[in-house]
Structure formats: structure tokens, C-alpha cells
Length: 146
Image (cartoon, rainbow, N blue to C red; front, top):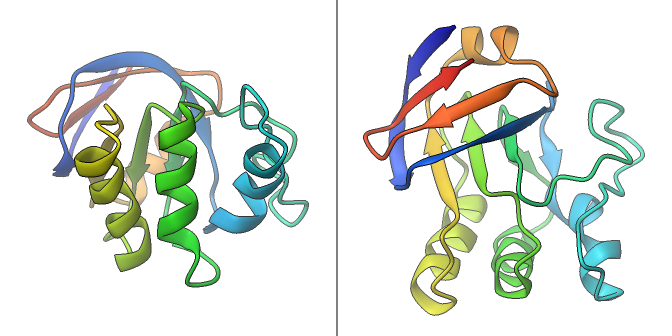
């Protein structure tokens, strides 16, 4: 068991399964197919991210360094939250990018989403947590890898 403390962007308490990407997550490539086809869950469609490609990330903690891709990133995150197929938490090892932050804030305010976002968890966080691990998140930004 190891604890990490990050900066809270969207607070919440949650415990569940982690899915880990060691590279930036392309939001459009990751979420587009599931959103456009009105799927009940997100199966990652980004073939360039072998860490998470083909994995179900709905209701999981998506552990990542940062999001990458086009300016649609925030809208894509807001959309999947509105559809209720989003990861339960976005756990960033680095400083969150503005596009992901905008999508998460809009999802919280406009969609009343309970999505959680914590950034600045550090490189050691991504080196510790593994896909399938259970993580516990508290609203003060503490993430415990169980």
C-alpha cells in the first residue's frame, strides 16, 4: 500500500480499479468510437496507446501523465461524462492540461457529473500503480494504491 498526494481539481471519494497509461492519452482517439456509436461503455480505441488500447475504462480510475490531441479534448470529456460512460477518475501524474481541465469542469458544472480529477501525483505514482490495482481516492487529493 502506497499513498500519493495530488492537487484536487474535481473532488470526490471513490475506490475501484485502475487502468494505467504511461504515455499521453489522446482523448479523441480514446473516446470517439464509443461516444459516436452510443456505446454503454468506453472501450479505448486509440491503437497508438498499447497500454490501454481495447480496455474498458468506464467506471475505472484512468491513471495517466497528461491528455494529448486536438482541441476537441475538453468537449469529448464533457460528452462522455454527459453520457455516463466516463472513467470515474482521471489521475494525472503531471500538471493537467487546459483541455482536460475544461472538459472536467464543464462536466461537473453543466452535466452534474461526479467525475474526479487529481493532478500532480508525480512520476512515482505512475511507476507504482498497475492496471488492475485497486485505488482509493479521498476528496483531499490522497490516492492510495492498495
